Amino acid sequence: MAYLQLTAILVEDYDEAIAFFTHALGFELAEDAPSRTNDGRPKRWVIVRPPGGETGILLARADGDRQAEAIGEQHAGRVGFFLRVDDFDVSYRRMRAAGVEFVTEPRVEPYGQVVVFRDIAGNRWDLLGPSRTRS
Image 1: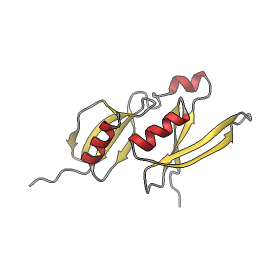
Image 2 (image 1 turned 90 degrees about the horizontal axis):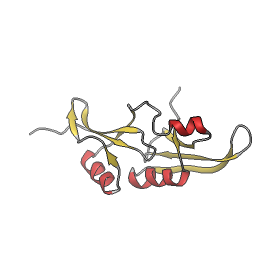
Image 3 (image 1 turned 120 degrees about the vertical axis):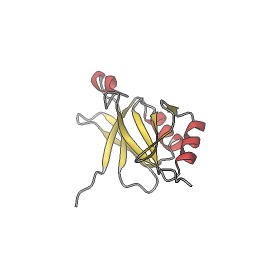
Image 4 (image 1 turned 90 degrees about the vertical axis):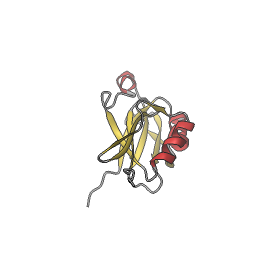
């Protein structure tokens, strides 16, 4: 058996990123522990994940100029992360109230409702919900 355990997002600050993911997106803080870089400098091992989700996001503070330049551009301006929710309208309203930056208006596609937003680092995400039923 194999599964995707983690993906990483480069961030400027651990605490600001934790606040964004836990408050604005409703994720859980799964881990926040002291760690070390490969060359022994202190860092933190910070993982957030959607409630009940198995795959987590490692919030990785940028280390050096090359990583700092990639903050918010990990997917070269494309949507690189996809957050599927059961209730699109409730999630959209909660995120707007929390100050999340939406870069498109919600729309309906064959695969469901969708709107593009940016995370705290500037990366683009799709918020995805089920298709609206038509009466």
